[in-house]
Length: 356
Image (cartoon, rainbow, N blue to C red; front, side):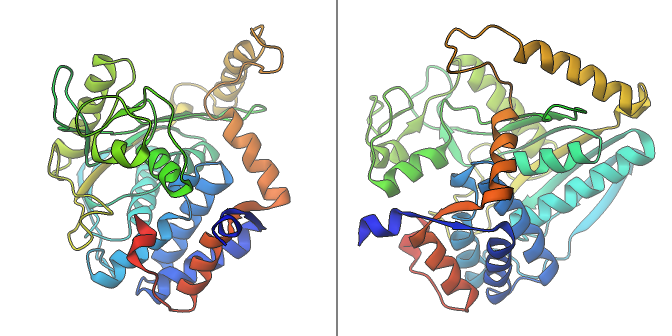
């Protein structure tokens, strides 16, 4: 039975979006917030970010029911300057708050050429690439990020004091898939470790330490320990920099204060985010910018590959290729997860162990 629950079921984007919407609405969310959140999470699965896709519906719905997510937030945007805004997410559904912040950032960039929206009172918002795709499809360059619960140690330290705070940089192309960098500051995302634990698989050596500070391949021990940053002190520095932009600057929780989505289910997470949209049309014609992007990306793609079976790609290329295939053929989803989504869409509750 356990193996059967792991087997994939191929589902259309429309069907999965409808299930996620219904699950959120049954948990109390408004139709508008449910639609925004569902679309972002389904986009995550379309691009292969399964740890930050529809599996998050279960935890989000549980938080909505507990009241640690506000089902009907009153989001308030405060214009701080011609190109600056601070958005209070009122502890709403994470992807819906972030999608609203992105919309406002894109609107500001359309108006002034630049739009920076800082978010406080946010929560986990899924993967960054769905927001990057929206910005690129609107013709904008995007720099964005969020902060997270502590999971990295400062270089030379033995305790987690820094969040695995991701960075997004995206720019639209004309003929090629857009450039979309979406990276956490650890060698592997925490969601990947959690997914390995759920599958019962070990993790590769060198991704994390256990609570004793020693390297481990046991995902359960890794989740009790610390993730290892990319590039040692460089990854640590980038993670702190992202916390400054997403947390310190916006008035959100920062440092060791943001709360865990899964282990502190009764408390608001308090995350901060930022979305910086840039209109390339203020520097040159947008068509010229896209053509210049194609030139750059083609130079990368034409690089001779060390392994002919593995041609050179760039950030976002593989994910958008996968997205196109899954838009056509459907999204593979574990049967167990599909059954959970169907139950939530009917208004049933799911055991909280399913969210860990």
